[in-house]
Image (cartoon, rainbow, N blue to C red; front, side, top):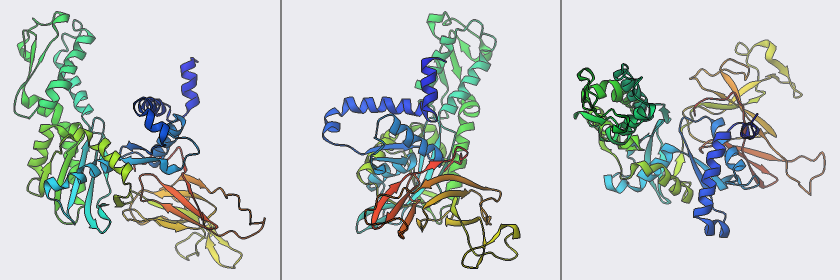
Amino acid sequence: MSEGGRKERERGGGGSMMLVLEGLREYIMRSLHLITILTRPTQCLTVPAIWSDRAKSTMREAAVRSGIVKPDDHPERLMLISEPEAAALYCEKKCDQWNLKHGNTFMICDAGGGTVDLIVYEIEDTSAGRTLKEVTSGHGGACGSVFLDNNMRRLLAYKFRDYMAQIPACAFESMMDSFVETVKPGYDGNEDQFINLPASANLDQLTDEKIGLEDGVLRLPASELKTEVFDPVILQVLELMEQQISQVPGRLDAIFLVGGFGSSDYLYDRVRAQFDARVRKIAAPPRGELAVVRGAVYFGLNPRVVTSKISRRSYGVMTRMTFEEGKDPEESAVVTNDGIKRISKNFWITYPKNTEGAYNISSHSSDLYAYDDDPPIPRQVTDRGITKIADFPIEIPHLPSVKIGDRVDMRIDFIFSLTELRIEALVNEQRFVFTSKFEATDVYGA
């Protein structure tokens, strides 16, 4: 095995992610050298909305291994925020432009290169300032602008199927570059587009009327681009938006299109055509391609802007609840020291799907389980559909006044209202924050 391959293997999961973060850390250190010497700034990284709890945990581990934060740093020195949430904070700063007020709702459609993430927020004006509350369970899909590129690549390959032997790979990539840099951002659904074949490959005189090629210039009819390249992706985005709107009680006040793909004129026109009668305002904020990174900065300055979130799945722990005749199988029954018949591996719901809040549980070490489907929810952690997703080991700190055998009171708060899952343990009036180790099998998109 090569030295590079060996090092990659040693990194384990998240190796590629760590390489990216190492480069980011080096850039930060060069750009902000004086600041990093004088202070220990809080770091904020954005993650796609469709990432699982385990993927976000891997991001944190990679950030530690890359040196962005140290292993002994407080967990809050590195904050993660979902990309649509960061975009929402950016748009919230611009709300005055669109006259959005207390009680108004708006959808973020963060359309990037790989994914499109969506979520709806409600504006709440409080004595502490303006905050946001999740209205829908945000979701997304793999239908970003890179899929336009894939469609275009297939279309070009089909058009030039009789010429592939004489078209160098670099010439084909040059045509793709023209699409990405010129055709894709300028396409409006009405005007035909043109791509020049590179003269360096002696293709500037090539003519084939059957495919719209004349003297090295390829004509792409607007209708063909619509059906073969743009609409297969745009229709997926519109369907995701319909799913979000169906969850909103009442009228949606605004839709904001952000991200690189979100600045597409054709996407904007299609969104307006489909939703204009149902939504008061549809807009693409200024510098929408920077909405996520700027929103992440706002989050770092004020991480309490989003006050509540909707659970994407039902979370729970294993407990011994009272046995219920007719509901629980007899083989799962145990009689505990208090003489009560209980179910041995009960799935106790701590945070139901589609609800808000955080719940308190008393335990020294809790495995966390999840159920992704709708009710009815199974009663045992061994039932079909319930998955162990994380282990939260509670490390009891050194307590000088406590002897072996003494009772130690502990309260554990499972915090579900953040981008990451975490727990806070209160031990003898001392508070400790822990993150979790997620199971490798947990691949659910949060």
